[in-house]
Length: 244
Image (cartoon, rainbow, N blue to C red; front, side):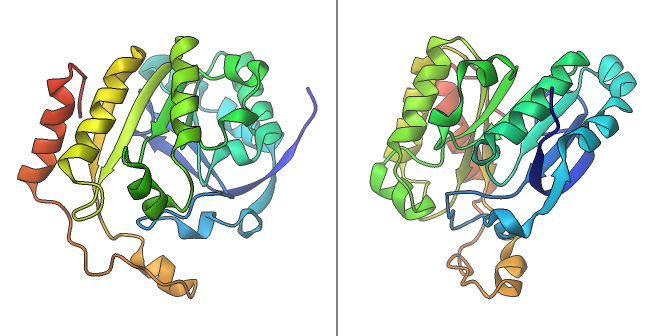
């Protein structure tokens, strides 16, 4: 296995929401999507990240193996979009698997064609972000087309890869009943989704947009109410899904 360098935004240790157990999370830079509610817009451009050796990260990951073994955690690669740097991602995951560490990748699935069979085999869990079901809404929210994400989700289902789905509920944007129910029905049809996280919209990244000189279009959008968030979760539960 040869070392590969990649662009990394940051690293977090002890994460508890990006996969099971305590996670070592590598946030890579570079993403083809331009989500209106992105809370890490500084990861959109790859070269805003720091060029980093995969082996250096793996040395650090190795120091946490005791925690992973006792708490059921592992390595999660997030972003940005990890699939934008497939060789760097493959090196990280191959090193982790050689250490017996559980692996997860947080992805929109838009670049799913970059995942070859070898890379697919190295990933224990996919955290798949499905931003919308209505194609026009998806394009408005992300700037890209929906179909590549759906195609990748179907491929994961065919291969019986474990998936956690994430859906962000944004008032006036993604909260239409047909949109929420469309995502729920599709996810339920796959058969390999073991968890769904309905995440209420927040504006924690707004200052980052301003610092980068970028216009934040959701400055007047409020977070959804607890009742609206729970109603969206109930829609997913209606289709027999394990919802958080």
